Image (cartoon, one colour):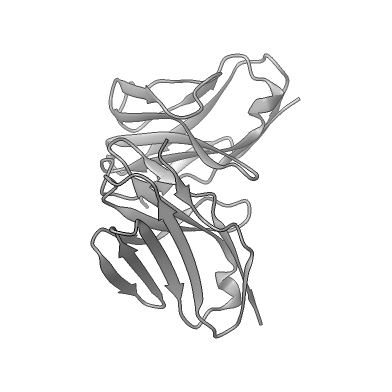
Length: 109
Length: 113
């Protein structure tokens, strides 16, 4: 059974701080990894994808991948209250994406 | 605008009354999928389709049917809905599976009484 594990949170950070979200996956053949943001009652929105070991930066977001440790993370710099949401990690397989249950992030003003 | 369109957004129905949730995408994506999302259980895949006339079961296919007669449409059919199918449903599409992320529809909140 392929699994993607995330801490459910909530992770609480003050405005302007760095939020660090983590994810581990069980399927060693996974090659592509994604972070989605989901506001309550809304659909998941793709915010980052990463395919190679190392860091990938896009604005305030940095995704990190370590395939040897089967570990993916998302850093959000200068966190804003509007970043408060649930963040879903997903790992690719041949025919599907496997999603973690998500980490709730709360950014306080 | 590139999008995945689901209808209806909200639906309340009674046990046993057949229903269809429609999903359409305008991005010429080969891959389409249905998920349900429940508190504490996350997103669980119901069915997926890698191309026209090619569908396969996901993790929780019981009680659901799908079809893929055209590339753009992937309806979800509940032939005899039961209360345990009360959930938030999402359709998603992707150019191909694997290296591409999904684009999700806006969701359908289904209540079966």
